[in-house]
Image (cartoon, rainbow, N blue to C red; front, side):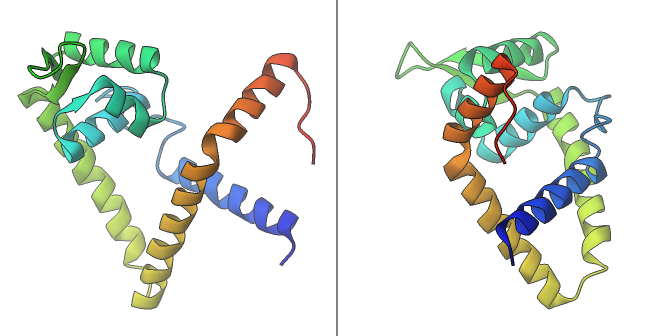
Length: 162
């Protein structure tokens, strides 16, 4: 299969997934921004984290993550405590309100995935899990160097090369 065709198909599928997950309409707007929802899920999954750890997982600048966490703390969604072992670090964890909100996200997101998986065979389910995992890992490995080039082009209004 030609590389251009593969790229086009992957980009098309990725856009469709973004739309179906409700990211364009911020499906969870009653809970918070898309970034807040991702932060909630990661804090729930990982437990107590430092700002740096959360920034890395969310693939956001530390300053952006700091503003996000401060807003969440102001809303009573998370709490920030000093790290007893390293004063430079602040430890972020979910409050009861944050746990209730993330539970809503898990319930709705899981239901959406369950509905989609019910349409697939066991083989297809395994292929989806394997393919998405491989692709997500490749994106993670390639992300920073390409992100910089894209931002640089956008700032200078230089069209991307084919």
